[in-house]
Image 1: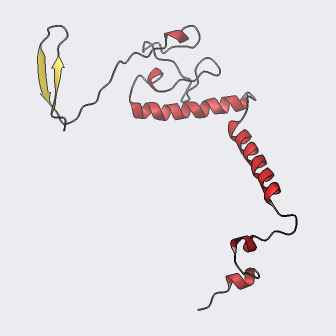
Image 2: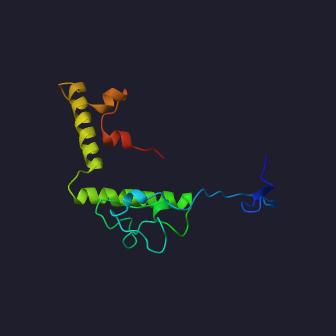
Image 3: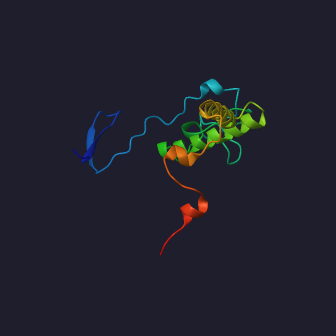
Length: 151
């Protein structure tokens, strides 16, 4: 099944009109639901409901609050641009958290993983000298022998 047209209904007159087309883009509402942020962050004076961001970042007038997508983009208002600005807001928020000394999740995760791997390595490692070639079942005397190539 393919799109062949759209049926438009005039909400004032009740009349219907069919328009032939091969594709449809649907936008549901263009006024962001941001009223809960009134008196907390600055709003874009030219576009009702949209939050004002600082420069090209996603920062708002309140430190630690970032705006992206449908609440800050009054021009494009597309899911794809919202996704991109959402990623930018996540990076801005992560940077802000690090600057505030509120943790670096990536570094903490890496440290925990490394500690876990080292604990496993110590408990599974034999007490005498360990040879990875023995574990692999290879009979290799050394690097020179394993790297030798005949032409």
